[in-house]
Image (tube, rainbow, N blue to C red; front, side, top):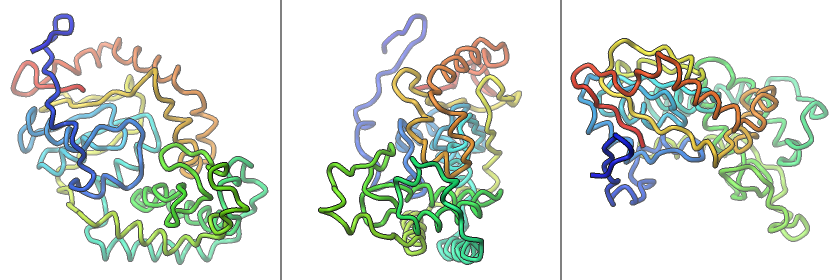
Length: 313
């Protein structure tokens, strides 16, 4: 046992270093989220610090990994995060279509509706966004995104965000990185790799993404999902009683979540990009003020059955 000031800290077990991408529920891989906690770690923490039926709270939910693992294990889950991208991913995982057939039907209907919309005017799209896509691909993605923005379509939006950029043929963009959006045109020059700059149709790529999302599908129990709130941590209204608070706070000095998710945020809502530019300082201030707030000062001491059952990474 180690100590951090007056707090006892248990060293992380070696098994936490093992990959889990080939064994976890495939909904965890809807769309990449930089800095997220491993699902295997989240699941183990849920098992250790709560029991079935408990309410598990995560005020820094991020990709929704902890609330989703809690719901899969028969706990009630409540998550919160300031990020709109976190809201999309968390709601998509906590309330997915009940089966692959249902998900494909939902996607097909949305694709058909998007195809009936007027052709978007790309002149109003920022140049930095246009640089990532063939014009015809971008028009299809824009129309589909407008359908996905409707409440209840978070699963479809998450699937779209998951195929927005990569150099692989199953994605929509010109050759680019997958996690953080930047073009890889120096590694893949247009004159040497013209096929990587051709039109990429949305429909087959989206439906393939939906199928991959159900490869190892486990549905959360509907009664286990309490909800998700998009809000800053200092504004989180905590329940008076809960079983455990399990969270993985953001990497304040290492990651800029707005910049690193810039393209996905633009597709969620174009105005968001201006709001999240250079958000490291703002998030750090919110984090500190949140934990100075008297309501949140109780977060790591409240419990329904023991004086301290909360877990932090």
